[in-house]
Length: 281
Ligand SMILES: [Zn+2]
Ligand SMILES: [Zn+2]
Ligand SMILES: [Zn+2]
Image (cartoon, rainbow, N blue to C red; front, side):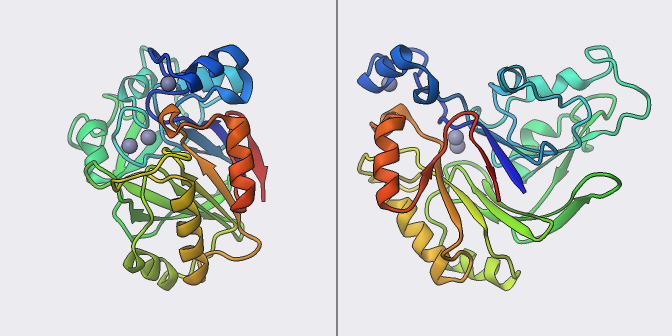
């Protein structure tokens, strides 16, 4: 299984559009891994995770062709994760599609459906070239085969300030990953239910919006909570010594640039995501 981190920033990106803080100033100056576009990833070049406002830029930057893409998992409807207008560009007339091109299915909760299910019958585009499929926590679903990988996905409720946010456990070919953005540490009940569904993660990518900053609210994490979450995953048998833990979805407000983040993450056994990072596991 291979995950490519296309974007690794929180909603404003790093540097944030209008921000004059030290992190953003340095990110403009240094560039490279210090700059983070809005969070998005692709698995095996077949499954896109989230469809935010930087999708188009990611396709150009990394030379990715999504004209035949069939699956996209949407975590929640916040604007850094879902930009419906660009999905509408798949409608015939905006796009020329061959008659046998399969629809792109976007999966999401009821909260995502309020934006994505534009016609109320599952169609995102008028011609059905993009379809919304509603999924629910702890109800596994599968797709793929016929020349592509076969994927099984388990949605679970995230702890985040919007309607029915989800994290996704994604499995293919005997490997599994947990995509946990945007969320806080998941409660015991959620972890127990995942455990009951018999999944064990080889890689976990976790929200680290607040970096090294103290957090006094629920809904995102910092390095401290990432480690706490990782420990809980291990305690529940969902992760182990071989699991790769990745801190991701950084905000400039977390007060930490890439280089410093790497130092902090090493001490807690995490890797730090950057735009363009690929991990095969
Ligand atoms: Zn976000
Ligand atoms: Zn800033
Ligand atoms: Zn969010």
